[in-house]
Image 1 (cartoon, rainbow, N blue to C red):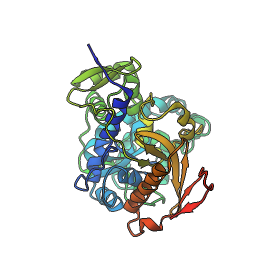
Image 2: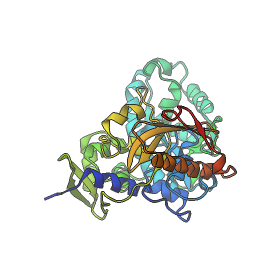
Image 3: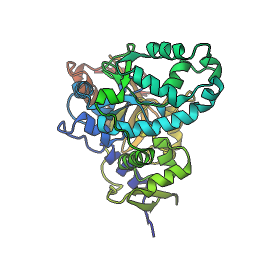
Image 4: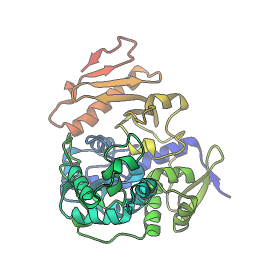
Length: 384
């Protein structure tokens, strides 16, 4: 009979696996942390640095940039077709699974355009044996398919039609300085096999099992729906085949739902202390679950998840989301969506100084301007 776990145990266990109950020391490298937590979200250049600063002591910028330069970390499109920083050793499996989902999504458009996506992607990988911009990739595929109107074949409103089709099969990674702190310039991509010096790619069955195992190690225990959403596997048969390859145990969630976890993984007691944390926009933790009840209350959801699909930076107290925050390079703006005692607000301000000191080591925390958008003692009043 499956043992039952509580909501508090799920919360603390997930936060522990995400290095959010206690920061790891600087001896644990940026690539190791990225592997532990299932990848660092990198849709925006600064996201992975803030995500690392919440989970590890020490300066974040050099740690990430050095790992990217050394090719120990790679920036690539992976889970849910979004950009992440992944350990180089984990990239190939994640790429295979991500490409499988993207090929399925773009195959109808390719049929309308009369294009073989696999053949197109193979040609693009060969073309990207040296770094290429997206414009250069699109010019290459247009030359190969004269007279084909890719924009007419894809759904309305989709930009970069040729790039979407050409990159659907994966195999490409970003070349630094893409992924560097504050780097928003034109990026270049290169074949991952060339960049990492290995053409070996796992078979699809092995790749799915690998990414599911990594997901559970970073986010478990989880339902099957959580796993499917978190890693982007389409189809129950494929998911079950991946699960069958793993040594798992079953648990029962607080709502009676069946949960899966790795057999050697431990649960963390629900009363374990959970310190204040600030996580960046689109942090992987906030999008990795189908059921997010272990992380935030229903009343908070609308303040974090926007109708346009955006997921705002979040403030965490006692293991749950209590607000949002932003930083413009100068002032920090904090918005509470729950009643917070003065000492809790002070702890949040201290954490803001800790995180930003890790990404802006030349600035003193005491110089940081902090504003509370909802401060009853004076809305918008700044503190230093």
